[in-house]
Length: 122
Image (cartoon, rainbow, N blue to C red):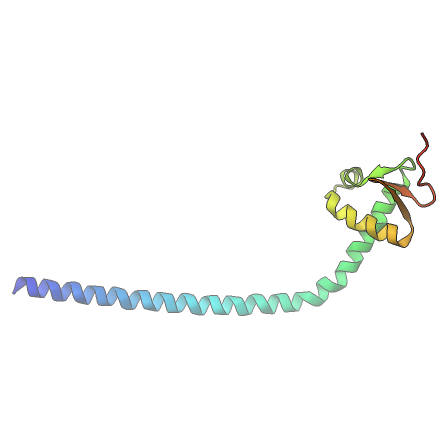
């Protein structure tokens, strides 16, 4: 008889633990869904501001890169421009592509020159 009551107690305890686990899992799922919705709302509210700010940031970087290249009439590499500006050289490459396309900078091999000064003097 004692072993039967022990089994019943264990069974009841396991059932209680199972219910508690199910409640926690349901709560966690509800929280994840709420966080996803909240995150999506935040990102949706930020998109117009980020889109408006992006051209200004890119134009500012282009202007800064052009200033550095203008200070080096003998040519300068993107890596050196990035080091001088404290910017990763991969971001500088995008700015130099924009400047080359606009005709403000000329590129010979890996060096960038101010426009109409592309021939290095040996």
